[in-house]
Amino acid sequence: MLQFSNSFFRGFLLSTILLFCTSFAMQGQYSIAYIDTDEVLKDMPEYRDTKVALEIFQKQLLKQLDAEKKAIAKYYTGVIEQVKMGTLSTKQQQEAEVTLQKMQQALEEQTNNADRQLLAKERALSKPMYEKFEKGIASIAKKNGYAYILDKKALMAYGGGTDATEKLKKELGL
Figure 1 (cartoon, helix red, strand yellow):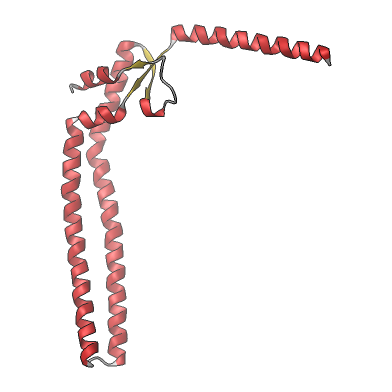
Figure 2 (tube, one colour):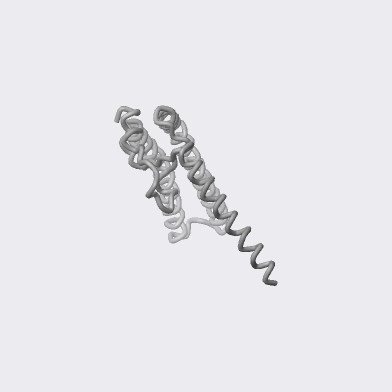
């Protein structure tokens, strides 16, 4: 048992030394930087342009949906008034109920479609911004010899890397 402990200890010690040596060797070869992605993106003019365009598009979609909601409410109110006055037969009430369900179902489909349209618009508008952002990252990595550029939020601790946020902003002309 004592022999197992000694060989285990020697193996552990050897592994630890090897790990430290590898770690020190790798530090000389690779440098790591981090950036604050949100800070950079929010400073890009494309971000503001995209945000404004999306807000306008969203308002248009909401206006269309509100018009449909008002039409449903108007139809519903009309049916309720006719029921109160006793001018609708049971069959007509059932037909009105089916019509109302179909109108509500159509509104739900329109809402889902509006969500898809908004998402597609966001992707289309933001694609050039992200392409520019990625080119900027690649450029500063190459110019500064960074092997890795990470997002600051993804790091648990960042005491040893280089903050390249300002370099990226400068590269992007911000």
